[in-house]
Image 1 (spheres, rainbow, N blue to C red):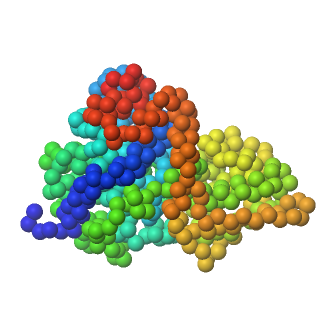
Image 2: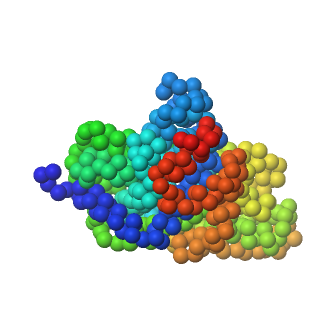
Image 3: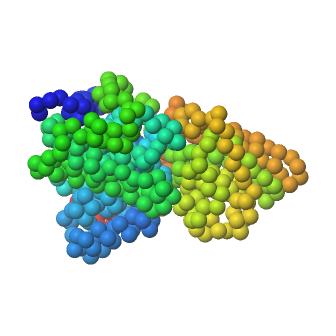
Length: 464
């Protein structure tokens, strides 16, 4: 390249972190936890309607019948048949995100479903010699790329966002990670980043619909395809991130921090690291759930509730007093409060249409009000909300949450993550023996890793 623009400096900085990942056992332990969580959540989400429709359409477009047992292609999580790698990554990415159960990052983003499915597909197809350590390293770098782009955006408050973050930064994260796994040089990876930059998007209006998961599935597929195209010699602008018509200005405007792309700082997977989710819903709702579960423990069944008032930052996108579906309830402060107060737990079954339209839910939802407080911050690392509950006998109860279990700086017990993993495997109807394997991916050689990935579909007895 004749000029060393921002994009090449970004790629070189990201690629240069590979040695730091490989030299740190703590990083590998974190990546094992993230791989296990991502795969388990994807297995549990595979049967949802959105990923199922994506799989059916992908099979139709590929000319393969649904459930084609052919061993050519990449594994579909908890599903029969295989698909070409880009299509498989799209389906698996949607499955990993559809339950809204994957970790949250700071600044807010979904960095697992946007990268991991691309790498899993590559391990079976274009990079079958990959071992677990190489997968973990590329995964960490893909997360790092997204974190740097999010910091460069300066969009830290939910109200700052115009586009859904994983749809914007996810394609580039997947492209960088895939380029590393394919062992592309930095100049070729720059073209992968440029291609991915033109595939970015995702309007926030689709949050609460099937299309939200497609933001993540599309991101991982587009990033993977960008790297594969670049490997073949497909080119893009040499500095697609920078300039008045580049990626940063197009999505984030002029108030950006380009230096965030190349700064020397701790790896994002460790600082601040992931906030693992223990409820399958939008992360802000976890604050409501935590407080409401405390109230449920104090009062018991919610039949005598007269009113509930949630005082929180102004967050219009989760102020949904009457979500039209159980899925939309994942993005409703009122709905999750009702579910927690009524049931004393918030599980995957809380977001079915049957639960949404049950008589007790219908009766309680109108009694729940939100009071936005402009003095409170909406970014998750500085957020606080209060719930005031008044009973029919006139007594009142209060609970506050300034961070749910597992938020940054407050790690949840390891047993919580283990329980979540086993629950997801059970929901997918797969063996609990996968538990130990998913917790030690970075130690697998190439053959063991490929075998593990192949065993995650319903077509395989374990030999990929």
